[in-house]
Image (cartoon, rainbow, N blue to C red; front, side, top):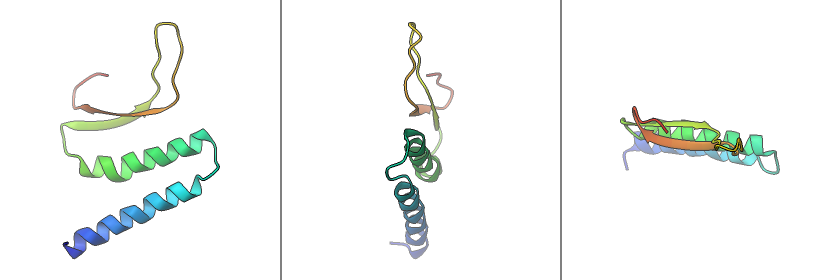
Length: 79
């Protein structure tokens, strides 16, 4: 493997492991932050356009709301 690519991937892995280990036994908000770290560090940096990433909640007609979710959609698509 290209040594520059390998070095960058190892750095990303180190960051992801630190985020994961720091959240062990923590609240759901903290665990959500770990998922956001994955989206920010890996997906946004490696998946090209036309895809975009985001997070939020989903609600239904009865007013119920989900926990935080992470989504991916083609650019310009409303979810």
